[in-house]
Length: 215
Length: 215
DNA sequence: ATGGGGGTCATCCGATCGGTTGACCTGCGG
DNA sequence: CCGCAGGTCAACCGATCGGATGACCCCCAT
View 1 (cartoon, rainbow over the protein chains, first blue to last red):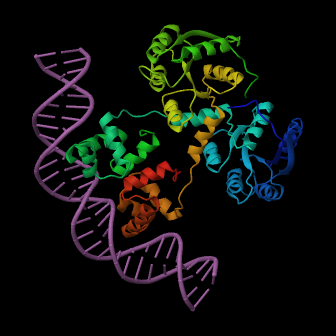
View 2: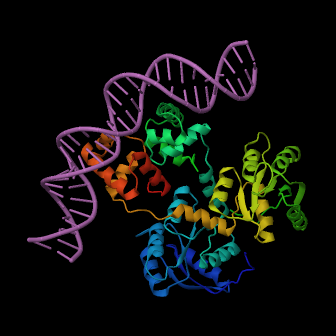
View 3: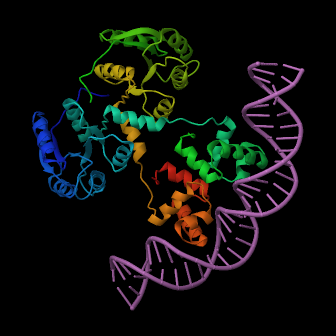
């Protein structure tokens, strides 16, 4: 796997509301022989129109677009449009959790920071063209952190109960599944509620999922 | 940001149950001037003991360790031990969802595939030494995919209800919060259950969290 | 105008849940 | 040897939920 890298020709569309930034990117990308900028857009609407007409392989997208629809919405429409969908590589200044998850959920293939080194950007563009994901290190770090989060100390048995709970199973059947009495299930539930700071099963499941207490 | 890279000296411990692989890594890492292999372990237990004694900056960890505790458990103990905790960089053959998430949850700083290019490995080791995350492209791709997943079509109102539901709130108070009657809440709940394929509130919350239907 | 989707409301009833209190047993560590 | 944590069980009661049905309203697309 991970062969030397074929490096095919990639046609890209640049979308950023700052003309200066677009110009800078144009100049920078000009130095990359395999990358051709086929168009540039200053708004989301423009990007959608140009993408439909030019069918670029990759759209380099800023999330902050000033007027009109924002980068996330533009990304969503680009990646959910019918026909030849471009891969969207987000190139932005910020790496907040909200921005990252919204962009990813909208269908972005990669998420790079503008502070990234030029050669990383080139590599990421080629990767995106093939549908492979590239994340800037701080972005990868945040994604990891969100998957990790601290977890409360539940006992094994409590986790068993919680697992069933998350399947929407009633106390009677939880009891049957674990070969214990319904009374015992309720006892465990009470302790789980206490530990998670909730007082209903729905709340318990919410917290459990939130903090990834289940497989 | 992302400065040229300081590249300090990094002391690492290699943990893999295959002697041949360890030898290969040793030879490979020998060619990297800034990386010093201070020890090698063939089992998880050995890795824990050596890590405590040698205090490496980074532990290169295989997830499949044959005998004794596995790589995930070893990682968990390494990263939750008191004192100077090494950063764990997982280096393995497989990129299944289960392996990846378990490793990350256990506290791994990065996740590389053995098929990765040597220079990527070197870079990842330096990154890990500083606590920065590196993911092989396929791994990053999977993580992304899991964050993306398709979502069912809930109406706005249904999402409102679901949001309250996930807070463990009862029907009466959901009704109050949304200025509607309790009967209406129940009607919405029924439709939500149908759409999500469940029949209890706990199940609905589980599915909702699973597919990221909530903010 | 005709109809469907989305939102609202009501009523009835059995099943289930949540709260509380008290109890016994086991294994581990001081 | 005793205490404590974890796991098990019981009985009771009020509150809530889930299931089934039927109905009205508004908006918008056909």
